[in-house]
Amino acid sequence: MRADRLLSLLLLLQNRGRMTAPELAAELEVSVRTVYRDVEALGACGIPVHADRGPAGGFRLVDGYRTRLTGLTDVQAGSLFLAGAPGPARDLGLGADLTAAQLKLEAALPAELADRARRIQQRFHLDAPAWFRDADPVPHLARIAGAVWDQRILKTHYRRWSGAVHRMLWPLGLVLKGGIWYLVARPADTTDTAAGAETAAVPAPGRADGAVRTYRVGRFLAVDTPGEHFERPEGFELAAYWEESARRLEAATRRETAVVRLSPHARRLLPMWFGAAGVRALATAGPPDADGRVDVELSVESGSVAVGDLLRLGAEAEVLGPPELRRALAEAVAELARRYR
Image (cartoon, rainbow, N blue to C red; front, side, top):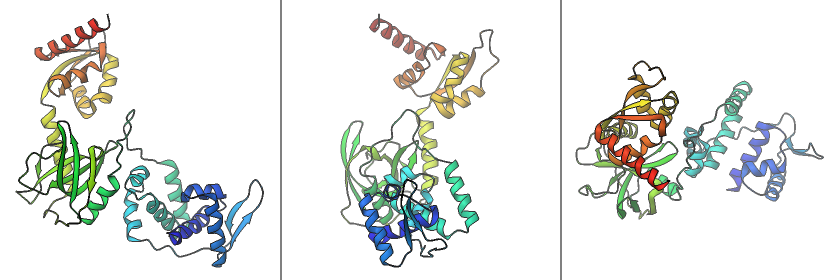
């Protein structure tokens, strides 16, 4: 809305001082021509905006002018919880609200606290996605977030490993993990135990009949909100569910233990490739041998997944056991050697 944009423009000039038309256009995500029209509108309302000419020019407020029109809307107030994650805020459709809320908050703070807030923003930044991996495209995230907020049932088309399925879901919450968005939801038909979830069902706290599941948002092919409301399961807590779900997922997938001999370089790579499991494995290491190699016990997934994960360490690691895993790695390496002969 134009009124919100005019207030944002006014607060930008108040909080940051002189700004050029291109700078204002970039901040407000509008054209330079729109900025000029908005400046004229502020002037017509009696706001003393002065235009300085020349290379160092720009727009500024007449010295001493300050506005106190800094009330936060409910959406802007809620968006402040994402102040450290501007990228995810944009994904959720809250980018403009977050910017407006930050400007209003900065304008309402005493000068000393406002300056401290600006310094913190300049010195600390949260980048959610993991290294060397692009975030999932999430074209349906904003609609899903709206359904979570409004407690509206979602009609979805979801891509599983085994094929696409249609599901009616009660969306209970969204989680951003390692740059990937996940929807925590309960199938509207609670008797359906074959829902297209990425993790095993976990009963919602306080409800014995509600199988809550986790869905990767990037795998939704289509979503719609028919309009029906639902009641959240009594006692359900998103953070508690996610912590328990993550624990169960790791326990369910990393069931095997591999004994691995690591070179000094592989010891540095292990936490990067295996995360917390790699850190725990290094804690089991004995004293290094004459070449600096150590033996560790590493939690791994079963079958081909473990083979693929361990091959990333290349010749810097040797699997000593169990025998079937060592044989599987030897077969994979032999096949690679034949292919690249």
